[in-house]
Image (cartoon, rainbow, N blue to C red; front, side, top):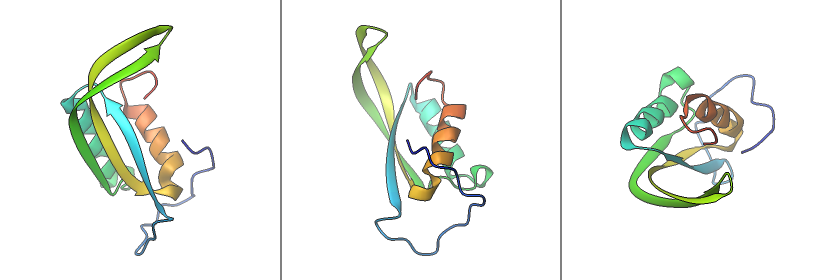
Length: 102
């Protein structure tokens, strides 16, 4: 994720170009966590860090974790946002996600 400083205020853009848009992929352990995180990210509570979140169930993830190859069923979030919101979005995902490294 981006490491730049977050903007001081979040002002929704009335127009955007493809240069302003970012898509973030984030896996979750199950549909309940996916739905909760998605709703949280598009809510006014988070000042709408995401414009839209698609939930894609039935993803099989194969990854290396602590020296072993693991395989798990997960639910994928496709998060649509603006590039300027990436630092805040990353912070929010890390704060709300159950994984040690989301």
